[in-house]
Image 1 (cartoon, one colour):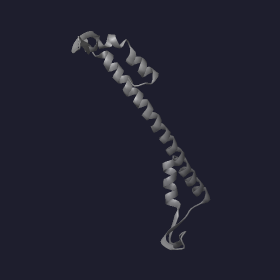
Image 2 (cartoon, one colour):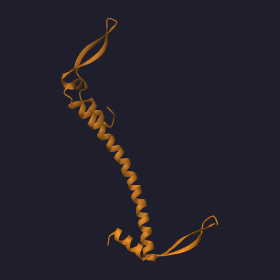
Image 3 (cartoon, one colour):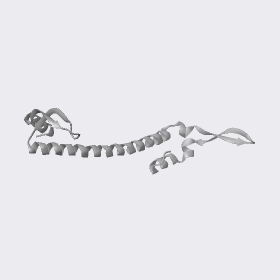
Length: 128
């Protein structure tokens, strides 16, 4: 029997009576009083405990996902840099001072100038 079927079976077997019960602050509340077997009660408690465990596992998995997703984004950015043809063919333009005046000079393409530094930083866990 599946858990869902078991829960439906318990719902059909439980006795539900109107009643008044005491609250922790000495007040009373009207509602329902449920009567069920100790076997069903223990199973429901086990299910509630399982839910708590699964919620903790989910919390841990979400934290792990966040880390892995961050790595995935950094890997993608590095791959996009190396996959971009312009980074291999277009010269890098750099500002330098020539005779006291700012000037732009052409350097080697960015991917060549980088010499794999972006990839090494990503693999080491640093942001490129």
